[in-house]
Image 1 (cartoon, rainbow, N blue to C red):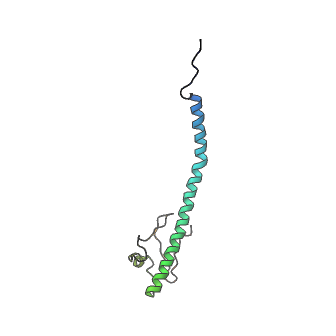
Image 2: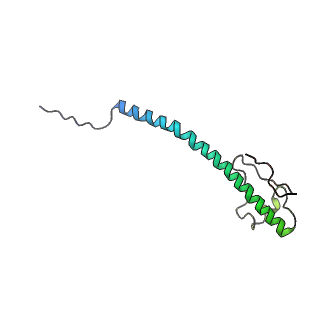
Image 3: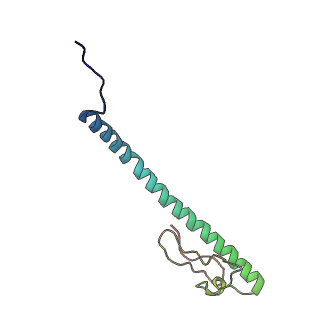
Length: 109
């Protein structure tokens, strides 16, 4: 007499082992992924600052004066920011400039 020894499916112990392994991997991977996101936001803030300073310099070259500190004047002109003024991706605040130098104030993340 022969018995059919083919199994279909997984035992409870095998399922618990797989879930434990996936849990361990998740605790290792997720913190690394979220810290990379924070670093990307800081890098984007630096890029936005540079872009604003370049556009302010162009505004000064074209008009003979720096744009308004709150960037309202340059933000209203689609030639400088066609997609609108950026906001800081780190904290969501708006950018302002020093009207004597054209440099962005703050945002030293």
